Image 1 (tube, rainbow, N blue to C red):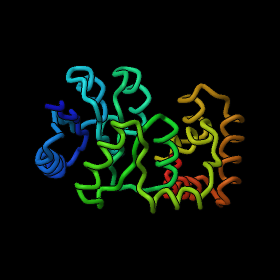
Image 2: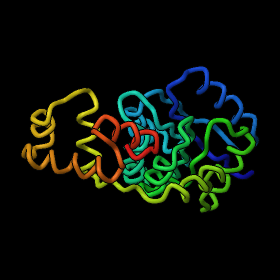
Image 3: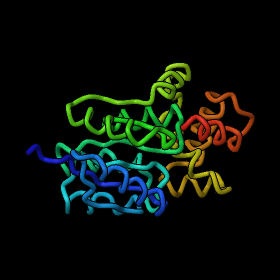
Length: 204
């Protein structure tokens, strides 16, 4: 008998997580071996159960799913990561695939499509929601540098230039330069508008 594909589900909504696990367990070749509700619990759980595939949400408490991918792949060599999210944004797709994810699907997709995607990534394939892939191509590459993203995010809650500078160990003039560059690249009028544009595109 062929071994079943073992799956870890990382999803913060309990009802969604349980329903997804139940539906996947109906497939003869799939087995859910662990479920976690927080992003900062994914690595430890994956090291404990050594799944073949991790289904990873993006918006998780404790730590974003996007920030988990790289460390997860290093902590559990050979594991495949499939992002399953409500937030089908081109920037999220690009960041996930750049970090090493093997798939990116939205939660509206039927579970049969998810099951097929799990089997495909286990064969070494890459699976991406077709509509989102087209959007990502149309949107073009992320225009922001890593530092520009950082200063925008740090200023999200009204932090001053001085606050951002201290938090990132930069000079205030350097922070101003990064903010100015980000605002200009995004065609925004101020840093608040720039952050909104970046978030809608999934670049932060």
